Image 1: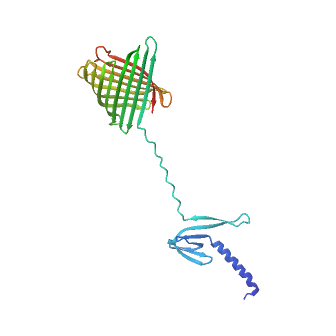
Image 2: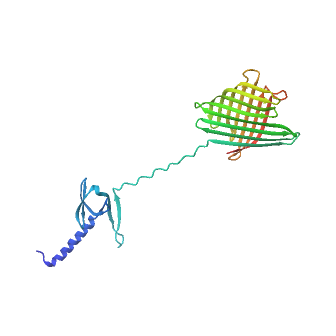
Image 3: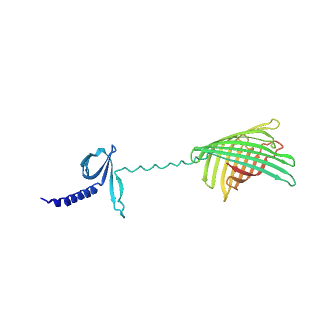
Length: 324
């Protein structure tokens, strides 16, 4: 039997050992689904339950189904005499799901494109001439369908006498049948006081073929049928039925200089000696982002004109174009 004088040191030694064991054992915190927490060390663990060794309660068995998560406790030694800093590392906690990528909506394609051209040509020499010009163009494209609207008005005076007064408008609908073949319907109306045409309208359906389509060069040909009805001054009317052959070119001539050109040939079906030819070319040079300088050349030739009207009509115009 130990002497009474040795009991106090042994008791103190046991207390220190128990404190050391408790501090080493308290290395995990069990968070239960009901909100409670249990601190201790794992004594044993199976697939259905976990047994903890706790300081105040001894061993506690906890069913796995009641465990929400586990939290490990790692004690870091203090550098100074300050109390040790305890860092916690959470385990068995599912990582937060990554935020789904934000879908960037692409900009809506621009279906409509429009341009307004204004020209004022003044010449004061042997013959004074003043002439104004208004051209409006709009195109609509979506999927396989395109719509092209064109309006042209010219008014001029030379030596105080009217030398130009004409207006034309047209609408052309196109739909792609294959990557290269498209069908179209062209309708237009106009008047020309100098050529003694009070009213004129025409219909031209047909098909087209795209031979080349590159950023700097586009070439297309069209084949169709043409019907034209003209009402002249004095009450004369002329109806013509013809074929329509056309070539359309868009190409970059040099650097920023672009050209749009179109040639149309209308051979009369009933009379082989009669025909119409229309040539139109526009040279376009951009001055600013939405501003361009345009040179327009139009040549019309018709074998069936009134007696006092020339067969050929050549028009050369310049205008500033504004796109929007």
